[in-house]
Length: 412
Image 1 (cartoon, rainbow, N blue to C red):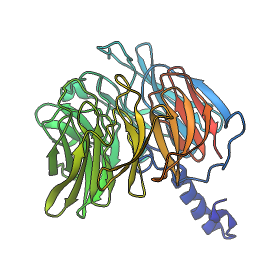
Image 2 (cartoon, rainbow, N blue to C red; image 1 turned 90 degrees about the horizontal axis):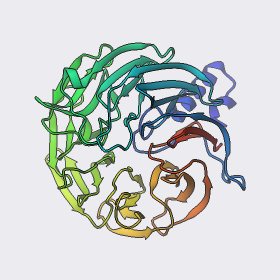
Image 3 (tube, rainbow, N blue to C red; image 1 turned 30 degrees about the vertical axis):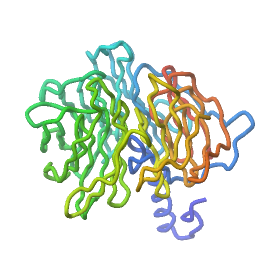
Image 4 (cartoon, one colour; image 1 turned 60 degrees about the horizontal axis):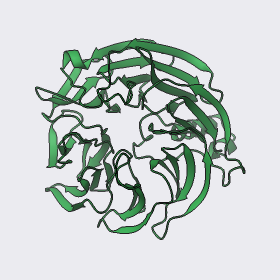
């Protein structure tokens, strides 16, 4: 129980409840700090024999956009027919609180999936959504009404690339940041959250399928982006480029989707297609390469976890070659501590010293984050096959989707 509930005064009760709720939210891609870390209420030590209890399920359309949650509400972004649909559900029951939709013209050139790729962001009482064809929307979180919309393909000539626009919005201060790969120096843009107007633009690079992370390096607040060809730090207020390191797969038809990770003054990026991994130190004097290579941790889609100076993630491609191996790698050196093929690849959430893995085949697996050895403690089938969207963990409720349904599993 949160300590705020044990305090008698009304003021302390309110403050304790507020802090607990803030910690329990999962308002954007990869959680509150965009690194896959959950800091909400404690989870159950053990699961039931047939797995955690499912509270509810909800039919979904196409797309690879993951759920997000805040203040007891869940936001789902998907597509049915020619409509990109956003729904707000009550986290405990799955009840639909509001719904909005927008016509989309996106057609996947490879025939994979026509739905949205980017995960929504909830901030400042708004919901921010990027569709696969570049339609960007700002909605009121309470009512679902549209506040403003931008057609980035029309206004900035943002291309859809091989697999559609996929950057999950990052809200910092009064702006929302996006990697859209548009020409004329609009590879990275910031839109004013109040109006949707362009606040600044920077970069002439194409977009990757990665999303930025907000951080501070060398005492300078910034957002770290992994674009098509570069890893870079951008001043979030002015759009000025602080540093840049050329690095990417040599293959043009590649998918670089993992979010960069930051630990102190270290920045880590990973991709498949021969790129592998890169670790940089960023300080007042510039950037210094610690190590790189394709033998430690080459993540195709999923962002690895960072815990105790070690990285935990999947080495190898899902679409070709041998089964990706789940690995523990030292961040500072790139040394592989151990490697296991006992689990399928998937999306990870860190819960203290443990992690929750949702595999591409719909299994939820509990793993210890230990550099000593691979340790699994429980697993349960909660979804069907072809799981791609990243899950959310909202106040002990685990929300995940496959190609047919969104489920809410109680881990409290």
